[in-house]
Length: 443
Ligand code: GCU
Image (cartoon, rainbow, N blue to C red):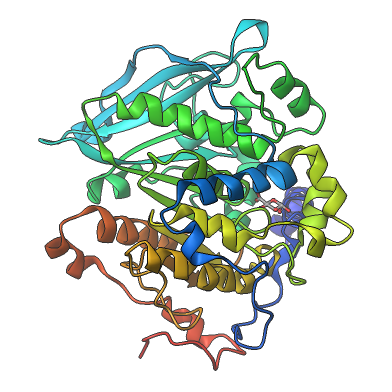
């Protein structure tokens, strides 16, 4: 009893922090519908013949996305980088090295510098790489290493310690900040990431000022575009490194950073695979969907994520000249994994599935499998457009990492190596209510 009384203040702080933090994903108390056949078919319809393999039609569609939603891709914005600074020559008991590079985007006084941290496995041949951008600082992603912390000094411990860190990981999953580098190494992958807010702060007002000052021939007007350009700059640096296989580069982003990962894959065709985990609105979910957060709520809460002109469509998203299945179609034939949580209704797993279904025709016309899943519970990692649904909410958990590495090994490794790593759907979904539909192959 005394033990309990003593801890009341701590429990209160955890409770209040949890409430504040989870408010942005609406607590995840309900389940996404698994019924897709009874929902509207995405509009506008895709002109498959025009989009498939035709640069002019693709460019016209990209321009529509720029004009309506994301603002311009900052083409020609200068990117420069320092060399690598070795932080740990014997990282993870000698399995690899941990290194850091400074990347500068833009020119003049408004240019922005951010730190890219990379874990290179010791390998005989160039490694495929997963490049991530994160909500959390590099110090939280690579705790207890001397990466540069936000105060410019070597990191000491983690910036995700204490009650806030505990609450964040219990709501948003073990890997919401921490990078599971060993698991990527086990899968033969190098891993690199940067803190997106170091490039453009995730703050309305401040973000627009930073973007307007970048000094490019074309400046971005949405953070989603700016962060996407950050992914692209990281790709410049990693593709130039002989330890990386430039033909096997994957982007991974969660939530707002999944939105920017998808955008990068469309505007920078060097990307070889995209993992967009719980990308939601302005990502893979349909803007015309009435489930979940909705584009309007997102763009009102986070106006800096989208271009100013997007506000004009929010009262009636059906007036938008585009929808997100077209963004997925523009990614074809690049392999894409769309990660989802059944309780993450906020990100709208249902319309994400329908979005992929509609884009699949372009993938098929481009000579890939497209999406062969027939229900939201099918996990078919070898599909070029692959959909992953697990139990649980808006988070990055261990099962997600398995799904990511399985998907990448299906697309990056020799066909012979794929078989053993292919897994099926998340079978715990079967114990959830309201799950009669779908086609998971579970016992
Ligand atoms: C909020 C926002 C979502 C976004 C998410 C995230 O919940 O409403 O659109 O995807 O933050 O980035 O975690």
